[in-house]
Image (cartoon, rainbow, N blue to C red; front, side):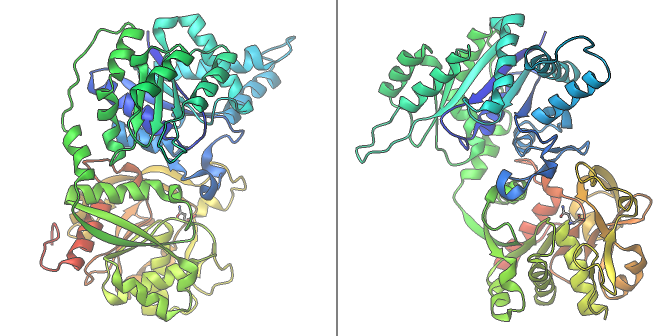
Length: 542
Ligand code: GLN
């Protein structure tokens, strides 16, 4: 029978609960257990696909086309597992199925209520996932903070699960913050005490407390937390700042979290086999040279909007012994402003990520064009790929005012147009071309060298694509479409042959990048950016 570890948070959001859950799951995997992670988001949206990444963070796309919470990306990167849409449960999904059941007559005669019907549906989904994934242990992270109204039915369901399947088969981990507010540097444990009280008020006693703090938790703080929360002092775990998130598993292990889990869940102690994890984690903290990447975008304020891209760059940098420094450039500032465009000269590479809508798009097109003319390494992802096509159409194919029908419905040259099957769709949620699709690469192309293969699988999230009617005209102008899918009808990769590195992809290679095995497209891009920095170094395959 599978066991369940519930990770809930207190004090405030943004404490890295996802990293704690993923790190813990990693430790258990390295100890030989079959483990996976699930995320519960207590909002009413059915999935994250309709949510603004500027407020909520990136929409992470799974292989099966799920538009999920960005924590699933954290789990995938730590566990090196491909998760599914079922790993992300939301209040919207739970209510949807209960209400559908009610309409279908499933509860005939009964008054349908939060307890037991909603809580039963929650427990059912959690247990079904554990069964389907055949794990020994399922880690479930609850989004939000204890005390949120939205989270209550989920906490109630967890409480019931402990009652039903037993203390040994369930474990509660509470993650909190110990701040330092005065100049003396005293660690304050009161917020932790209060949030544990809040948890107890609804009938949950935590088994382990993982505390985020700037510096290691002092003995005094540990004792105090233990005393006020009735958690044994060895199960008060310090999760203090460290050089890289990939070092968190080691820190938690050194803090003794596994011993605590093993004894509380009555699991036989297993010794941990770190494999290559420690050296991979170390490669992120090695101080070395840096590679500066200009990221041209519209969401300039929230780093979480493009978290997978940031990680793919970091993974690539770590593998190549360099620290990738991403600097955001506001695309709108590049529009019609040649002086600002020259700012791009000082970067080692230019990246235009995925995106939607008109605002800033002309600035991104200008950046894509500038990179092409000036020989600056360029990587265009999804929207960044489409905008590179537009830049090329306008400047090298004589297609004046070429554009995407997303940006200009009356363009004389819709070189980027709606996917034909999208014309009939009028619902916004979950309706893009999503998830993993197979792509064939042209032999001898840059794409082929990057991937070392002629067939790849990558994840997608888009409604528009290169208009096949313009393929020939665009290619005569000097770009090559070297990746195609769906019976060659879809352009997936573009490159400019005599350029140091100019690569665009309709797919999102960032979603499958992992520490130690970076996404090939990103690795090749950072490698080319390094070469621009220090000419003379070789680029793989060139
Ligand atoms: N807006 C573009 C489309 O829908 C690109 C989407 C993206 O970058 N994810 O096709």
